[in-house]
Structure formats: C-alpha cells, structure tokens
Image (cartoon, rainbow, N blue to C red; front, side, top):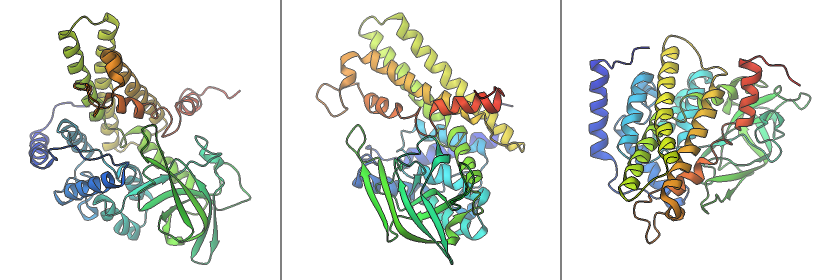
Length: 388
C-alpha cells in the first residue's frame, strides 16, 4: 500500500476542494429527519449530482464520475473538511447502489442508479422486523408470487429514512417451507404502492428519523427483485458488507470529529485545567481515527487488486461505532454541564452539535448489525472458535 498521492490524485483533490468551497451552503440545512430538511438535503444532493460529485466511483452512465475508490476517499476527506451537509440518501448511494452494481440486471442499473445518484428517488432500508432485529434470518414478512407480481405482507420497523423516502429495499420470505437464511428474496418496494402504510418513529430528539412500514397485500412487479428468488440472503450480505466495511462510514467522518475534538480540548485547556485522563482520551481518539483511515486505505487497495470485503467487515464495524461513542463521550466530559445544552439553547456558545452527535453515536453499536452479533461473526468466521 503506497500512501503517496499521485499528481493526478492531488489535482483531483484540488478540483473537489474548489467545487465544494464554491457550492457548500453558507448556513446549515435543517435536519433531514424533518420534512423541510429532507427536501433541503434532496436539493443539495441534486446540486452535487449536477456538479458530477454525487457518487464519484460510479460509472458516468449511472450518474457517477468514473473515479476509483482512492479518489472517493479523497473526495470524502474534502467533503467533511468543507462542512458539507450529511447525505440524506446514504442508504441508496452507499448501500443499495453498490449492491445493484453487483447483482442488478442492466435494466435495473439503468432504471435505479441515475435517479439514486441525483436523489430524485431516496431510499429507506427495510430489513428489521418487530421480532427480527439483529437476527435478520428470522424475518417473517412474506412475498407470494402471483404471476408477474409479488404480494407482500408483513411489517418492517426501524426503517432508516423511511418517514420521507420514496422507496424501500427489503427482504421477504418467498419459500414458507424454509427456515433461517434460506427462502428469502431481496425486493425493491415503492413506498407509494397501494397496501403500504408508513408510520414515522420519533428518535430521542423527537424527530422522525425512522419509520414502521406495514405491508397489506401490496403488489410489486417481479422485476423489482434483486438477484435470484430465494437467494436474497447472499444479496443482503453484500449490502451488509458495504454497510459495515467501507462505504457507509468513510474515515473522513471520524477524522473530522477528531479534529473538532482536539480544537475543543485546546479551548478547554485555555480556560482552565483539564484532567490528564481526558487529554489521553483525546489523543486516543485522534490515533484511532487515523488508524481507521489507514485500515480503510488498506481495504481499498485490496479491492483495487481484485479482492473482496469479507467477514473482517465485522471488525471494522465494531471499531468505527465504538470510536464514535468514545469521541463524543470525551467531548461531553470536556464540556461538563454545558454539554447537556442543545446548540440553540442560550449559553450554548462553543457547545456545537456534540450532544446531538452523542445521541446518534449510541445507535452505532446497534445498526448495521449489533456489535454483539458482529463479535459472534468474528469468533466463528475469522477465529474459527466453536459454537457452544
């Protein structure tokens, strides 16, 4: 792995930086967990797409820039450094999009990817069910074949971005005589389909970041199936690999948080003494963010050489999710009582979004497969430890 950037990569960085400096909104957008904020973010992503920056590693014909994954990492570094808005369509562009690249037909790629890149269509993830959270193999929602359509019944919950999204990608049991990982099919569902009911779920901050989705005899075309019937588990595991191992949480996100944490520490030191343990926690945060970055570059190098993301994605997921919690806990400890203030509260100067970030970080060890489940995956598939 060569960490020296080529002249072409340096030129790419400067081009991305220049565009972002000229186009990033001067004022923060409203939360995309609100109706108004969702549309503001959709318009921002449409602007990204018009500039050719929506999803840089995708082929040009699908709304991308045709760049490689190294340039994607460079762009992510510049994106977070610029303070650009969060990506409302992350479920689509970072998770489903690469999965369609791998499993989709030519027709599906042409149909879904350009509208995904432009956020004309925003996607929700519909895997979890009331009795099948981390254990996705226990899903009970069904898809019964009826000619050229599937009839969907069941319930999905904790559908990320589901309150305002246009589409949902989910797993459904198509063979009732099978159990666990077998007999499951990956289906793409328009959320305006008759028989589909979306009920927003409020987060800790009161905003609708999730939704319950009820399916009552909802009919979708068989052409909405991704991959083969009854083999959706393999498709879903590909999506999970992107979610845990590379695309969803780029290292630039955590490098940016580490930089802000160091700045907060310096401001705190300037105003009084700081416990040595907190200094050590800040240093650890910086080091871990850099370690995660180097590991990601190593992963990308392996992929560019023809490798694949394997079970080690579970190690990745545990690392970045627990790093996120640690950094925000350290920030709140530095802030003391002021850390409990929301950014808009009187006296919140210098507090920033640390509390909001902390509340969100707590979900990290849960989504993308709980860390307890990931540790089981590591034990069984990497360490080859026996089951009880």
